[in-house]
Length: 231
Image 1 (tube, rainbow, N blue to C red):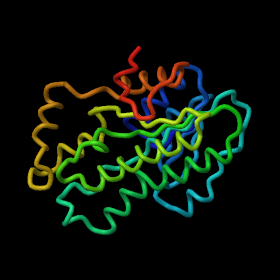
Image 2: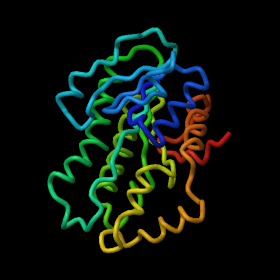
Image 3: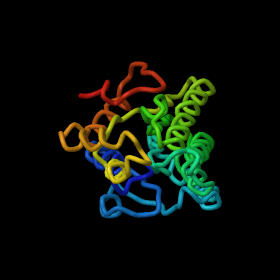
């Protein structure tokens, strides 16, 4: 299993659950977690996914011995949280590059370079389908991810290609959201309230549900919520 964004949050939880279930896991990103570098079935490839040159030079086809290879495009950023008119080119470009463009390029590499049985997943978001004030770049980037997954699923009907909505998950990104101002994000109080009430989903719950969905033999929607596939 190849996973991006493994240093914390959902990506780290998916890595831990996959290792527990016996998968070989390769992480891709800037920061190598001990979870992978110190595990006999873990490995890590350093690559700045927001750097087009670095990503273009990345090769995935080193080992073709696995019965099933899964790519989980999980790396992402919240991007600028502010009214859309105040977001700079640099902020927008970084958000779209990391959340969308890098996932598209890595997926293209995966489809071209990996032979045998494979599945492809993207960490999507409810924000792809619901406009949130102050999140223009993030909402747009995730909407693009959902549509890209849907297009690929039509182009490759023989493969399982999906984007999953994990819900509001207790990750560093949620902490970043709670640290924003009401002026930049009018809905911040709701996120603070959900955190304080203990309503956030645990990353481990998302990971368990995703691995369960990967293992299922029946057909599932291209865009799905992990809460629908709890064990």
